[in-house]
Image (cartoon, rainbow, N blue to C red; front, side, top):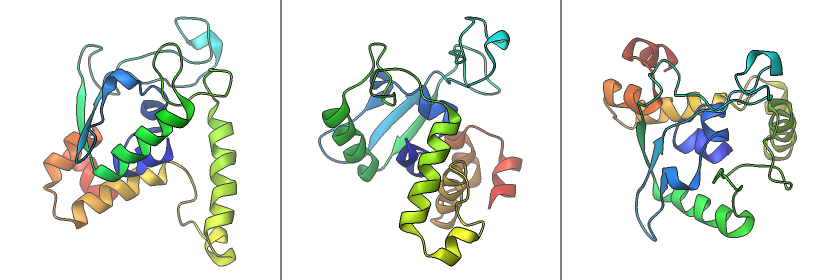
Amino acid sequence: MFACMYFAGLRPAEAAGLRRQDCELPATGWGLITLKKTRPQTNKRYTDSGETFDDRGLKHREDDIVRPVPIPPELVVILREHLDAFGMAEDGRLFVTSGGQAFSGSAYSQVWKRARALALTPDQVESPLAARPYDLRHAAVSLWLNAGAHAPEGAERAGHGGDVMLCLR
C-alpha cells in the first residue's frame, strides 16, 4: 500500500480501494492503475452502507469518472509479488487484513511509525521527514516534477489541479 502511495501518488483511501481488476501488471515494463473507487474511513453513521468504510467515486469527480495512473516497473514487481504472497480479498481488493477485512487508518499509521523507526536514524525519526503515510504521495509528486514531468500531466496523475500541484513541490 505504501509503495502505491509513493510510486503512483495514490491517496490512502485510493490505495485501500485498489482492486486487482484496476491493475495492468505486465511481466516486464511499465504498468497501469485505473482508479475507479476510493474507500474512505469514517463513522458508520456517515456512510450509505452503515459500515466504517464506503465505496465512493474518486475525490472531486463524478462517480463514473476514472483516473489512469502509469506505474513504473518497480511498482509492477512489488504488486505482482504482493499478489503472489497474499492474494486478494473476495471483492478483488489488494490490501486487507489477514481475515480479508478493511484495515483502519490508525492500523496503517502504526505500521508506518514502526517502519520509520526501523528505516531512519534517530534524528530523522524525530524530524518531520516522512512523518505520515500521506507524505509518500507528496514525495511522489515532487519526484515527478523534479524528474521533468510537466505540472499538468503530474496533476492529472495525482488527481488534482495544477494550482495544487505547484504548491506541493
